[in-house]
Image 1 (tube, rainbow, N blue to C red):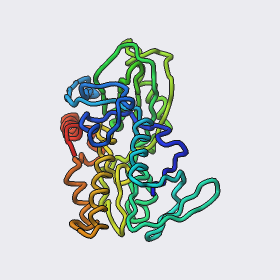
Image 2 (cartoon, helix red, strand yellow):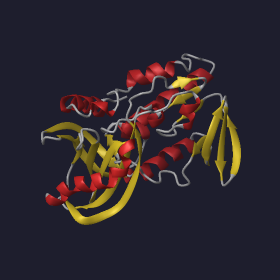
Image 3 (cartoon, rainbow, N blue to C red):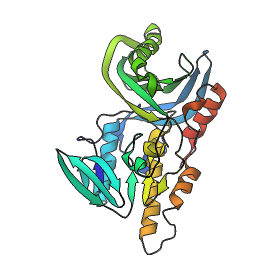
Image 4 (cartoon, one colour):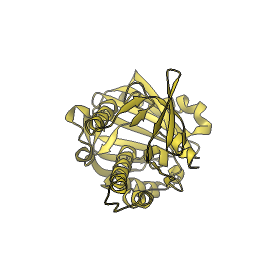
Length: 308
């Protein structure tokens, strides 16, 4: 059983959309989900230094990508319910839709419910360092094939990105949640450099989205009491190019281990999930390292070139 809080799978798409090219063979998304290919990522330091990390990949239509994953789950025999998870008690999850509550039970519960995970909270694991983000989609004047990450922002904390996606670009910023009230003005200040360089249209905002991102690195534990945490819920996402991949690979590991644990073979118990995720997914320890350009470059290179 899959419980998705969104009424429309994949919407809103709170994501810049970069994935390394090797992820296509792991998820089976088709060409219709690819907006464009990119050569890699430019890391732009506050002082103007630039480091290019060659990491061929794709910029995705996240809505199309998410629906592909949902369809594959349905084909594998899953059921899908659009509802809001309220709480988890033992093997029981309570969800609500249109003022109606329903219970679901399972021997294993996978929490993939974002940075403020209800499932994670039920086992005492909470993302305590969270960034608030906002992103504009804007008209692109000059085609580009490189994703850019800029940081740290003014004040020494936070980051920004420029992601080309065909005839538009996704331009966004992320700051500590306590400074979320400054998000729009921070983004508009950041965008001025691209307008001045003639890369985007001055009055070309075509859409806006935003959301939260864990910035504390992996939680102390991502497995307990029959519960596994994946992606943002476990603090596994990394804003520097590895968020989608980390979520997919952690879900893949969960499927492998749960399948083994619940089968007659029982080659691995559920407790193996935590250590296996940490072994296969590189971690930079969250965004607290934004202030050091060289460390950030090393972290980024490690994240975007791994293969799960």
